Image (cartoon, rainbow, N blue to C red; front, top):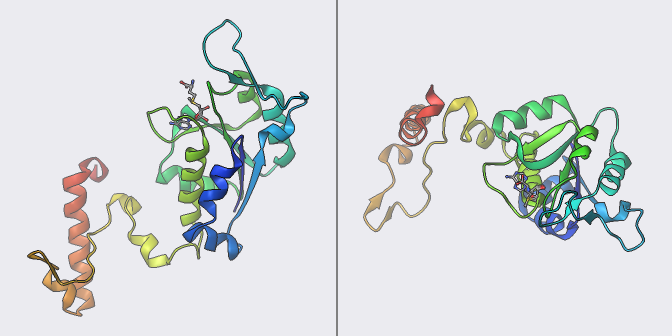
Length: 221
Ligand SMILES: C[S@@+](CC[C@H](N)C(=O)[O-])C[C@H]1O[C@@H](n2cnc3c(N)ncnc32)[C@H](O)[C@@H]1O
């Protein structure tokens, strides 16, 4: 999977992708992340990418020219392009797995300030939000989407941990424990120490049902 992340703040993206699981996925060529600086695509001499809104109002609006030129610099007939906006469809696990089936090339465009000139919508496949709140920029949403989708790619994480992750089969993950066996009087459930794999599997499934019923009963519907 290739991600092109279009941003005015490449360093935010670079800082995140240079660590841990995503870095390993990059090193192992399981994913590719291309960071594009929208400012490189302005035709204005002073590097300007935004301007005051027509009709007045506070804040600055990202201009069509640099954003659309940046998109066109990486777009292919196979790619899907999304603006990150609070007004888009809300991202979730299901959308992540649908996207991975539809394309091997995702272009994610990060807004800033007051957001995008509305006409940019005519040059993309849609808008994605990561929740009903407003952030200062699209970099965190782009990273959230890239990270979630990357976990779906075989080899990025262990297959077995992926299978039990929360939201697979509409269930939450089962509770996990590690050393010590007793912490301030709180014990690890006996069955996990039994070595009986069939029993452990059954116990964990029951725990998934219990936890989901308790924390997210809506998933069981
Ligand atoms: C301050 S926001 C602009 C909000 C816009 N004026 C509105 O109210 O719909 C600046 C940028 O942050 C990003 N952003 C903020 N919240 C987001 C969210 N919940 N999901 C995705 N992107 C978001 C978008 O790229 C947006 O263009």
